[in-house]
Image 1 (tube, rainbow, N blue to C red):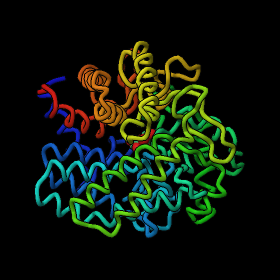
Image 2: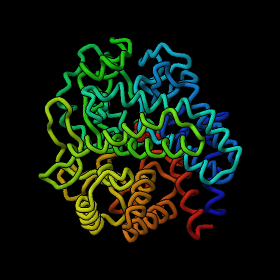
Image 3: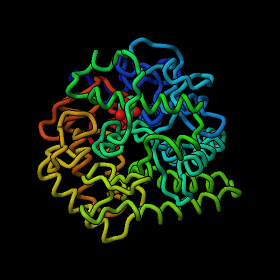
Image 4: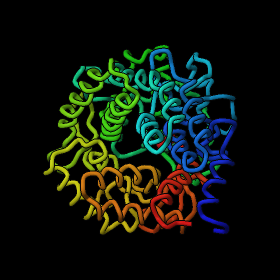
Length: 424
Ligand code: GLC
């Protein structure tokens, strides 16, 4: 790779800029995505604070009345992506998708405030009510039993689209017989072997069809929809974000929401106990209707550290799993356990390593005192990007770069890590 490495990362963020918001990568994902934008903001913040805040502010412009922050914002209708606005039919302005994504925004806002000055604090103050409303939406609309355990209504809501964690939930979906002869666009840009299968796409679209036929009534979709799975990723990320939101409220001197946020955290902590699968001695996804557990170790389970969700014993156990997995996977941290029969080193969330997951996992491990593991994950992330480029994801065994290229969040994470290491 020519030129300075950090400069290259900055130039990717700039070239994916579409006027105040970034696309994850051109062609494959030509719109604004929720958690991609949050990570983009983290990257921009290393060299352009104003631009970082714009990214978040524009994202929140698409927030729904009920507080939901959609996973995609469609500011135009681009033939390179399917399913686009006419398939989702959100009925909102701007048009959006009909569910959310991992709520990393509050944590990223808190991080901008911690590293910033008075003007960052004022931008955060303006965003605070929207952040609170977003968290409130998750706790109300996606917690059907009021237990504190959050469910996702579509695998895409987890951000880990085709993880084996959803296989059993997906198998229970009866594919709609009137999806028509739709044409996927993703495989025009990325090798089909590195993407979800057509059978999975039929099910993804069936879920969207259900949502749109029920006018995106979120409570109803959660209670009666064809898919409801408790994802350790979403639960841990939300738990962490609640904690960061609470700290932010404290810094802003906002008192009236304190009790509410504290009760969310306490409830989630308790509820997450039910995600510990004793058979594999690890956190795992769980079908909220049948109670069935997923049977493998995902990278999302490793976010327990980041959430501060576990006991000492559980952290020790997770760390042992991580060490064993990293003896097989040369490049941390595989999205699925390489010892499991569903592991596929090149297929998206069924094996590959993702820089954003690495960032959160390592941050959590370092905070809980597992410094060696955290350091290994940081080093691997840098090495992958340095060797294979700013790819969407990477083969954890060979280190090959996979999926979309010149990827926004990979560039953003490089900038964040570079600030704490010797990358030039
Ligand atoms: C894929 C990923 C998702 C991401 C999106 C845009 O759908 O699974 O997490 O937000 O691409 O990068």
